[in-house]
Length: 577
Image (tube, rainbow, N blue to C red):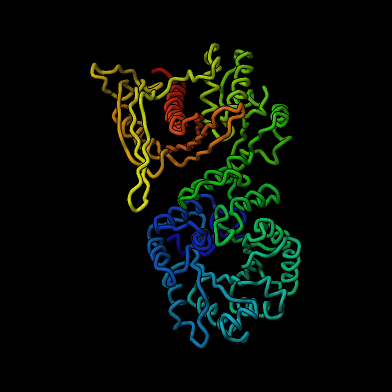
């Protein structure tokens, strides 16, 4: 079975360089992250599919959830690239390794690789473990030797190594020597408190390699904001084993981000740490790992974030038209990302023309681009923001390019999924101060853009998918936007079944002072997702409820229009029989 593999399979560097992921243990210690066993299995499959060499599944015996994960992994995980790793501690002081329950649990996990954590800082050995250096080394030596005799491959995580080495280098190296002499394969130097800077850390790594000749790994926390930089510095100093977490999840400020480290190793140091065909999956995998952790992707994450290759200033956009490489450190396609042109009040013609090119919109009327620029700037002056709402911008550009008369007064001419007739949102406060919101809507449901044609029934109902008519519903939510979204979906479901394919991922509400001195306006950004993609829409109005409805309506309209275009494209590529 694949879980018995002790070395990476089908990776270009084989066993000469280790890409080691600890999302399922270290990452799970991040605030707000709690993996179910199902989540852990799903994440392991994602990381294996990407081509990661080692996946640390958790601490069996210490955490029931991790014990359950390894039990299920033995029969449910079919790993193609990775070897599964169990994490745990050495035997306790004064106890035999083969009789220590924690050590036995590591064996019973059936993981082919075991990573043992051991303290390498004399202060921690004496004050936290309350033992001496000799016994600590014996604990390491005995446990490694026992696990090796049982056929397991062993790595050692030298906890607090850099702090311990700075205080007492001989003790730190003595602990590493105990492990390596007993048969451990890698001595991992851990910046457990995350306090290192790249220059000093690299010097320490180089000294350790020179003094010991051991194979060295690196594990960095991000308390100085240098976890990725420290990891790369360690590799340049000779480390051949890097431990990271997906998206940098972890305790306190997190760990070295696996995806940023991969991007740097592959594109800057030319280390083929992934199978070449898998590197373009970097962005998709990062977002999928975020989804299984129930965390929103970081838009500003290097390499894989939505803003990683986003260009806002008009000067940048003009240069991008000439040569995209002038303002991008790599081709985003290499890591599965894409360039984005953010259209704002700073935008000029070049920005919008590039945006149209990205969207596949043919520019047949140059005056339409001028009108679109004018319209965007006017709307942004009124509080709209399109740089974070690409879906609303795409609808706007389709309107302007499709209708030469559109946009004179800033109204939307794209066919909408529905038209609000009446609506209200009521705040309800219980005697225990619990607050809920109730929304009621009455809508005119339009024929779904691009959907099969249908006409409304005489009584105003919805006779078939894509039909038109009136509908209404009332629903509750934790906030006004949630309540409106729930009421809209309840009202639209009988008329537009495809609405059930979408989900409201999140939203933000911001009250803005009017630039003209008039009443304040509310801007609502809504993030919607279906099985294939995620998009953001915006609504602005003096009424918060009206702004939310505009954003929610655009979100559903974008889904309908996008699906219609996909169907049309598919139909156009299918030859006639």
